[in-house]
Image (tube, rainbow, N blue to C red):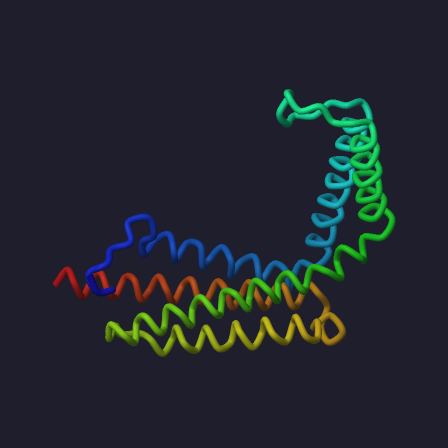
Amino acid sequence: MGIKQLKIKNIDFYSLIFSGILYLGLGILFLIKKQAIFSAVKGFFNLLTLFFIIAAIFQLIGFTPLDKKKNFSSLSRAIGFLLNLAMAAIIYFKPEIVVSILPIFFGVYALFSGIIRLLIYVQYKRNNVGGRSIIILGAIILIILGILIIVHPLTSILPLSNVIGLFFIFYGISFIMDGLLEGLAKRKYSL
């Protein structure tokens, strides 16, 4: 079966366009409303700190939502308590450590997204499917962006919110383009 006959039932034109618009809007929000994003991230870090404190307390008293049949030793509970407490302290007192790791995650995600798009391009080329140039362009941009972020985090050049904003804008545009290609393909085969 070639790709031309392959039907994707769960993803359609409207969901791709809608997802693209949401990502695009999120990217613009990161570029324009930096203070609102900062407040949301600060609130998220506070919730994450609270989560680790609660997990540490549960470790200390021996409560675990995991398999009740397993008996955890006092040493393992103490280690779990200390690790959870350490994570809470790092997030609360040194959030810049967590934030400094964030661009690397975005870089890895962009790199893998680019590789996936490159593989899609190869399949499209083998099956002579149209619209390949947009896919290869997106793959190249994502791979270059991912490598740049991993090798030299762009936070020294641009604020993190700009990097994340630009990433989401490009990601949203790629979803919209995929949706338009999907819509054109459906229209072509329905005629």
